Image 1: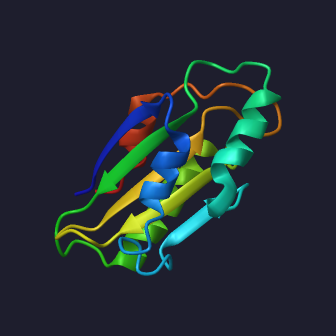
Image 2: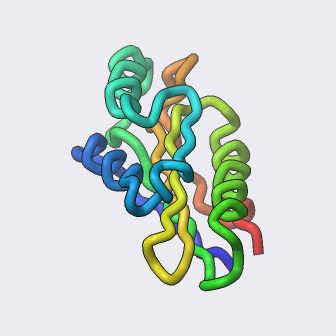
Length: 137
């Protein structure tokens, strides 16, 4: 069963995105996807969206980690599950970068998404029950 946790990003957005996109952890960046932005420039694009937002909130983004038991899924399956989770909880309204790390015994996803919606500029308020209900068992 996957375990999901999340935390806010308050000041180190570029460092967080650089960390999750590390080619040594993502099979040479084969397990890196993005929505509404390019992974290489996501911090700049998030910043631009935030600058033009109506409700900026207090965080630059959120970092969600979804970990699987060893042998539970292949890296490709984990990445697909991560994309489905991102689409479900973000509804296509928020820029995000999703990576799947294969550097540990267990496969795990990192999802970093903008704290504000792209089109309307509304701050993302996380309902942890939503994340829990979308995490596959």
